[in-house]
Length: 159
Length: 264
Image (cartoon, rainbow over all chains, first blue to last red; front, side, top):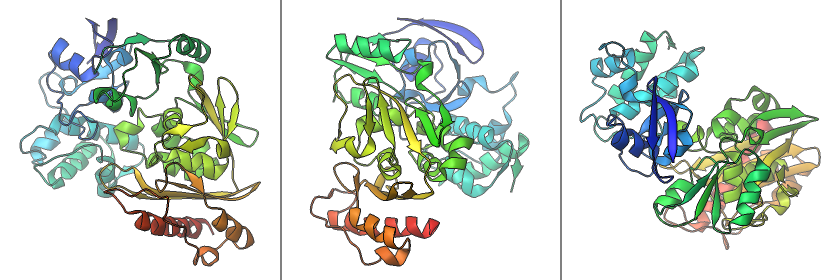
């Protein structure tokens, strides 16, 4: 089946089987390997990308379901070689050790910022809304600090 | 995953007609259950009929004292809806407690109900609030909808189009979530509706069910004390690695009392 969609702002077309997962299309067809496959059972969140601006697990979605839509991956958020403020915050706060979960964490963090950009954000909310992402290294403290710092840098009121 | 053909109909009627012509076809809504099932090869549909792009199946509106929710409306949209928050805050809370943010951005109310997972949250909502399930063929009262483990009153190919929730006087949903999956080990919706008090339980049995003893007691006196001594038998309850049947029976009482305490 032919699909055409926007990936990181660029129009892309592909020929896929209906059973091809979105994450397979991104990684194998487009070579965008920043999106990871951790558990392949929609639990760990390493495969999180944005579909029309909203975080989804790309291992639990068919590529054909993204036809005609806008996908943003971790490769699409830095501008002009400069880290996105959320990426910079993860580096600053040691929000990663092995880094495997990091692309999904950052994409989920941007979802948290989007949902709370007009109100305020606290640590409890960040911990709650990272429920869809697992990290097996850090114990989460650095990640939570990073999300709060990144959100602040993006103009969200952080308590 | 086995190979399958893929259809993207433009209307619910077209979806139903494709399904009618293909016995082995599956509807695909948010895919949060179907896609993992396909990956494990627990289902092998020859066609998958994608309901996602059908605009008529999506959306939330208020009409004549009812909140109408389209079948493919995702949990995040129900949780965030100002109409739902104003009219039935318990439903907003319930939708916002399903899975995690990414799952809530894809999973749908129609998919959840059609699947009738014993641990899903929405079954407690429609049963507790006395909702009506609208399909391509008819309207089904929540009391007639759940038939057993992953079994509903839906005929093969019958497609849920929307769910209509009468706005209750008050309602609360309390859930003991599995800490990993956030599925309900036990969830209880307590509501005072125009037609009486309703207490609906999910997670505990093969499918969602009502607790009529508690409803009768709460009708006389809507208070925690009224149901403090009421228990439900553990005989037919789910017994698995997450909780024993006896523990689930206990949790039904605890969650029901917490729900009543929240709105009494």
